[in-house]
Image 1 (cartoon, one colour):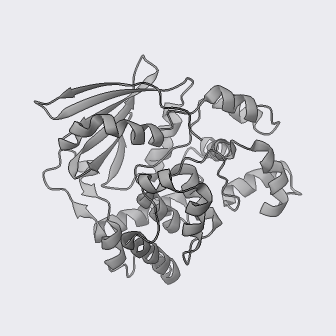
Image 2 (cartoon, rainbow, N blue to C red; image 1 turned 180 degrees about the vertical axis):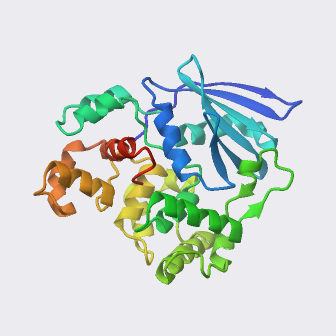
Length: 319
């Protein structure tokens, strides 16, 4: 899993309710491609990529604020600025921010392993600092994964924006208009009227069934659950829910649970990328022996394959 957290520096201004964290990473670190990934999937009103930075409204132990993350122009670190009452919890926020931006990755180790593969070597050389983008909220990510089943990244992002409008909460007086909405809580999403939201009825039922399971505590999904449950138990709890299949579980394991070996085998873009290299490998079962060679870094292999397509298309593809 992740390496030990590197040391970070912090500065807090009580007068302005602002805190700044400098969180280090091991170079290379591909900030532009990480931002491109987040930008293509940003939930309208909740999060935004603007002026080379990622921003969203946050809440931490009842304290609200705004998180803005950008790469330092000179140092090997990202700078996280926390505005509002949440700034008082700045040191505690370092860990989830580091996970979200994959700051603990060892690119040299990943590069050495994946670069030894003939298919992946040119991709790793083209983007040696590629990271696996994380998520601020495991619940949000599962919602996105369910909504994204069988639809494009753009379509999923549009529907997620509608969900926020239906079941989310407007933050009055929020200083950043582009992030002035709170994502729906599990209870609010479970109870919302999602008629004509743009999804098939079965997917709506799966989405609200998942929200009810989280609201009731039957399905662990937050950071505390990840810390106290093993990977198999987490996967099993999600997979047991109606309408949630292996792709959704592996996508969540990759981004929310930070499993570096997670592999969404039935992802259409990944399957097409592999088949284009070897037409005899048309099905996930046929591809497995080939992709097993990328262990224990299959999540990074997936990002490289998605990134190859995104580079060609100039837009968000895959995941």
